[in-house]
Length: 618
Image (cartoon, rainbow, N blue to C red; front, side, top):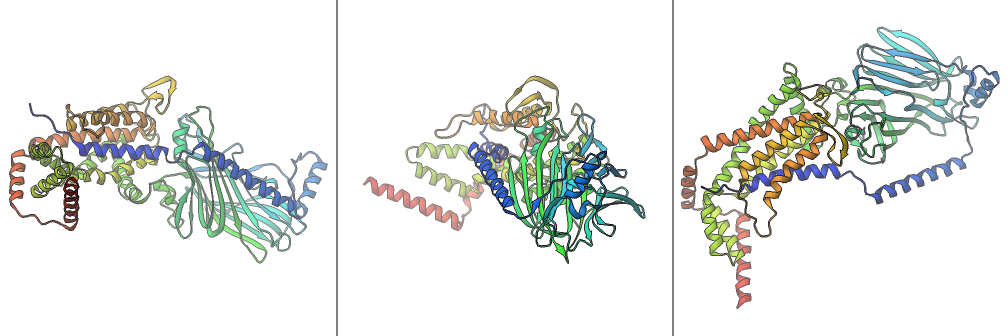
């Protein structure tokens, strides 16, 4: 029986794929030294800021907790705010809502204290909250002419509701007098996640100290929404648009901070939902930070990351006027694409470079189209079939290269035996044979490399596609998260505390594919890695690392490998003919072959090396 040929090219492809996977998993993991250095840096910055604040002449005023039933406390509160003590402190909130989102704005601070999605729930059927129970603060801090530093989050605002056509308008005013005030203005449109938000002042020239900066501060702790906090945290990230459209991100795996200029919007992404602050007049500078709150998988952990932004607002003639927008809603390409002027769709993690381009302009529209008339799981299967058919020419090129190498194997074996004691000569003769036969040993590896952009784009598409969120298929309850067929009473490092079936099926399919392409008999070459070990290692990687990834991704690879096996069988049985390939190679040998510059240079170098070797022996 003929010995099956070792498919080195396929193995190289799989090793490259899983090597990139491992790199992506670990590239953002900080070392203990980096963690300690970051802590030291933060402590130093805090110490410097504290020292600077101590040296200021202004007195920072923190409004006391106000007991509205105690007239003395109320009087002390008003006195602490100086001119802004005109506004009476009244507890309460005002609600803005449409069919999509519910917002609750507090009199204290004039800020949003609750933001709830009306049409979405978490994995345990609780409404999706982006702001709730004090996880977020927003406000300005500024100096006044009487040498105070005030924080609006501690000040009371006076609310008033109005209508602008079908839009709800809420004005929150912190007053110095009836005609002098600092205003937060919210305008909510029907059926829209985007809320117009304006900060402006009237008659405060001379009240606010224009010689000191007015800083806007926005802090949020991301609320957990998914069953796996580690998985959710992997796609939770602070993203921002700055410097004429450049999109940047803080680290998703460790604490990070940056100072940027000309910022257009800030996105506090919580995997499938985002809190975004966009401005129509660029923020001149912004100090951004992200603190990772997830160290390991924990079913009780309620938050993922802690975001913080501090931006400086410009004053014009001693007055403030900053037109902005709030977005509290899904990180969904269909929704965010509506806001083209703001470019909010760029906050979606499509991936970088060509990978993101493929994801954004090929896979996302394709899947959106298919899922518009097919069940979501079936749409993945159909998309997989289309992608594999599109890439079948590359598969054919790979198998054709393998067939040519198989035909040349007897002649290569003869060369190896003839020059077994002369590695340089053996390599020269092998290259000469390949050149005459018109065979490029690397041509079988190139298709695998060309498929890598597709692989990485899909690796980002399935876990971040909002269209897949909480969509079920067969036993998988959520195609954007892992499926569970068995819950383990313990946690296995890297694997988790559950068993997912789709990664098991995908691993089995990969194993059989590699068995068919590499064969049973794989002799160990001196100095070469153990190919049999690699063959078993690749499915093992799939089984372990994909156990916590989107079941839609594992479904894709399971179906993809089944299709690849089918295409391989068709090519081998009905398309490739060893006799015809052999005849073509013999014809190629008869034709004169012209060396390109690279081949000629390589031949000359090898001949020189061989000559030097002979001279050295003499």
